[in-house]
Length: 141
Image 1 (spheres, rainbow, N blue to C red):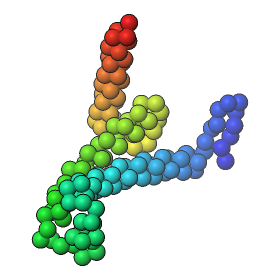
Image 2 (cartoon, rainbow, N blue to C red; image 1 turned 60 degrees about the vertical axis):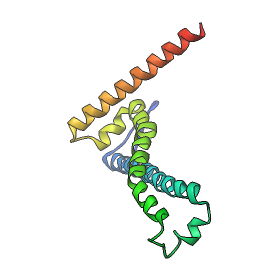
Image 3 (cartoon, rainbow, N blue to C red; image 1 turned 90 degrees about the horizontal axis):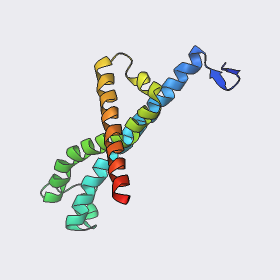
């Protein structure tokens, strides 16, 4: 059972394990939905080109593999999934890892090289944001 001492909560081994499991599940769910965005984007490109009726006519339950829309969707799906995964990492997970560094240790306990890469990315991202903030403040004044 977790103990409360003032404003600090001390977790026992069972609670810590459950917290790590929930953090991992949350991050994997975020990555899953980010990857699904890539699939939806590939289908969206086909809808923009051929119109919304293509979803029922050619790409429905029994897809027409002779139509170029299905091949375009299949060809764009993997790159868009990678972009969705990368975008999810950069916009959601990396800022959380910067704000709460102990979250990174849940995932990267044994992968020291990957931890160094993530910390270098985080430092680079922070320096880019700070540099852009300095440029914006000099433009306003």
